[in-house]
Length: 305
Image (cartoon, one colour):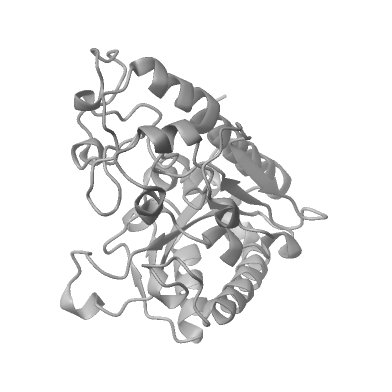
């Protein structure tokens, strides 16, 4: 699968917000999602930014969609966002917006006080990963609304559809929300300095412990340093969709970028192929685990209907 990162020059042509890679036959309750690997930068967005494209791209989860691209071979779909998180972050509430970024008062339904907004990383971010301001001017709410309608909502409609389909067919779904993390600049404890992968399950609330334990065990078998929930316990997607009592298990996976890419040039490292091979094995192991544990992972109560 070609990564959208290979087509990261600015473009004035609108594109679809998402792409779904479907298996030839749906045989697994797994759903893989890559919300932050998109690299379609609208030309107007780049032109109006204070930052050059190379700096804007520091916020991408580069190549994560490609690392998990073999999921359809194991009977599971892969969803990827095509627009970058610097343009709009689908791993947020729909309306987490910083009022200081706008030239008018925001509607009352907007969440202006979340921790993510205060950090400058709302649905429409104020800064990139390097802590530099993105915009040279204030935005109108209409601009935010347009991005939410055309990028945010289609992504979550697609994700909700894939989760619902898996749950109807198999009685449960395991959502693997796929991310990467910078290798430096994190507020890590000393014993976490060399971590490779962080699994986030909202401290046990977004999925069955069986799922997290299985993922940790499979990745540990190939000598990756894996930790849980520190410094990433799972974002909006994990929190919003994770409902293990109703058979929806959401697990976030964060991969250290230094394992597979040069973080300055954004070029793949030689180890990229080996990491992808390991993650392909991981996908197969999780699919086999889901088949074996289906009775335990199905919903234990029905949602109100």
